[in-house]
Length: 50
Image (tube, rainbow, N blue to C red; front, side):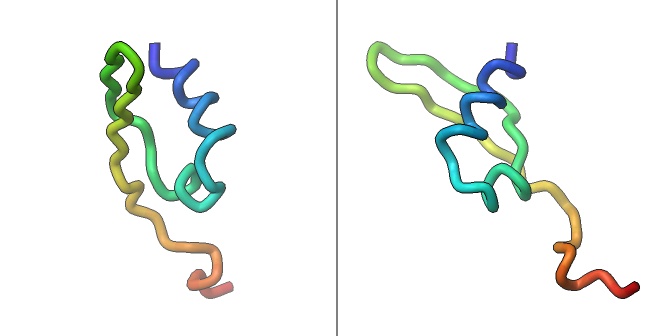
């Protein structure tokens, strides 16, 4: 169900959104697609200490 919309999101949204948010649900209207995203709780690579 959401896998196909996840692939669509990767094409439409900026990479930073795809990297830090995940699709939780969606609603289809006549001409509108509402996407609901949840922020992924992860530390950006730039802030990780090696």
